[in-house]
Length: 479
Ligand code: C2O
Ligand code: CU
Image (cartoon, rainbow, N blue to C red; front, side, top):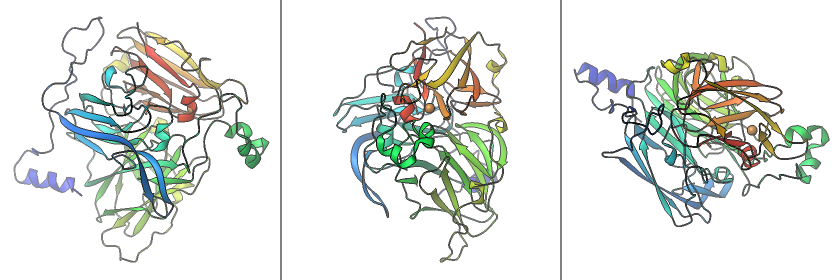
């Protein structure tokens, strides 16, 4: 692994500008004339590109000690292999579909041009088996992102991977970094939500009537929680030197699990939320909803071997784990405790702790339009989830006009939390910039604002895959 801080020091000492790190400037300049006033048109990227190929195909994946699992993968690996580029680089990825079903790739969080957004039936036709498709866009701004299938339940079959766009100049210092992908493992293929009958009979027997309403939201029972595709009994080890700072890019591409994450023996400085830099805030634990990412910096000043763990909020199998091992720990040293105290107690990150360090002139603007949306399920025992009473795909577009500052106010009329995700834009929620925000259950209210300055139909949905598949999606668009 690269020791980044050391490299910076040496190049500075040698009188070099850190020539290998800076990148070409971000190219999202908005030149040219839009068809409509108020658009900042994206020029198609030109010039040399960083090229990648991702082959979507089924594979047998070894998850020690649980056994072999048939997953749908990128390049035979689960999670998919990391794509890493520098801010402002042109990224070209050829998707080859060797699955039995059509598929697409969505670049979760990256404000790509509409045609590159990967939503079947909205921004492109799904890529048929044996077909391919080239995604081509400018990798900006820097941040921790995901790429994943946007077709059916393919996400819960394993079709996701990390996309890292490195900063030219990070606002925090660190020596090393590691990417942590959280997921649930199903024992078999995902089952489509039952739109009419509600909960399956088996689940009713196991859970009893009292739990019915809470559990009847399509969330399947996972066999195990995994970190970087590894079972808790066989954790990945992250080596760290004493006195070093390690940046963890924590990502939750899971289909229906909110995780609580903590590091035993250490606090975490949260430095980025959904890829966007924030004023560092120190916590013992954070909760991360489906689709969210948090970057944290951990200072290694408590030698030994420690668990980095993620438990399911609301239950599920044992916590997913990795190990933080100091280089000077004795070879036989075991992690102690196995489960970090932060999973039960201590300071938990709140949405109001997040303060963007980015200047965002648009946030000063008064909203031109306010859209009120209620999030709910239609009928107690029905599986259908709706946004403002409409169930995707039988739903009208939410109309906005070019260049408008749009305020969206959501109220959650259900007991379940909903991680709501807007494609194509960052929005401001409180003092943070994000594109996925968890709306708490039981009348939880969240409002966000964004500037509708890119043409196209932009998908907006709950990132709980089974809620989305039961209708919890809309499109923001103009005609
Ligand atoms: Cu990560 Cu529309 O999704
Ligand atoms: Cu939801």
